[in-house]
Image (tube, rainbow, N blue to C red; front, side, top):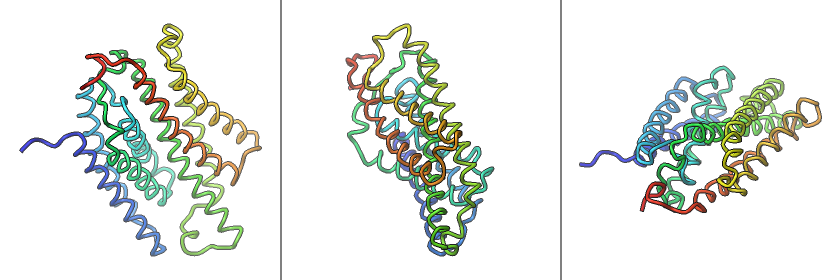
Length: 280
């Protein structure tokens, strides 16, 4: 019997995330909080399976697995799960665990069900350049941060909706206070912008040396995402973009960030294939 492939391990991860999402949904429908310990264990199991799957994929492609849309989406889900496991407990938001499980489940399952996203298994896409590899990984990790920010933004919107209509029981009673959600949103927004700024700074060192190696649509998409989130952070700090408008902006920006993966992956497809860079 052949050993499990990388995709098999990623399916195991997706199953764990789905279990977490179902657990959180059932608790939500019963209007009670789910067990944080159980959710943490489920997410940690999914994270472990996904890490091993991405590790096997990394061995196959000779570097960080970020060579096609499938790998980019999987890495984004992995980043969100990683961040929650590292700092999620500090936020003390039980619904954030449910949201993280649902987000990770959605991203992993959709990517696994789209064979065209994984049609080309590109090898050595970073040419052995550790800095460019770090730049790409850091950028995708910031997208994971923005994913959690989107979840918190949706919680803020629900809490605001409930308060305005004096809906204090049921699901609305499980939500944190407006003040807590606002503080967490600001910290996540600042963290994501800082990580993406670091990624662009690292990448710019190489771009200045080899400007012809930069695919313009990819550059415009990445810089646009950074500029939009930076503008949102500046407006938030100045008290201009606050409350519900900030929540809706953060949710919309995360959708835009996910869509920006398309030109990023297209930049790899536009490069001429060679025995070193592409698998048949």
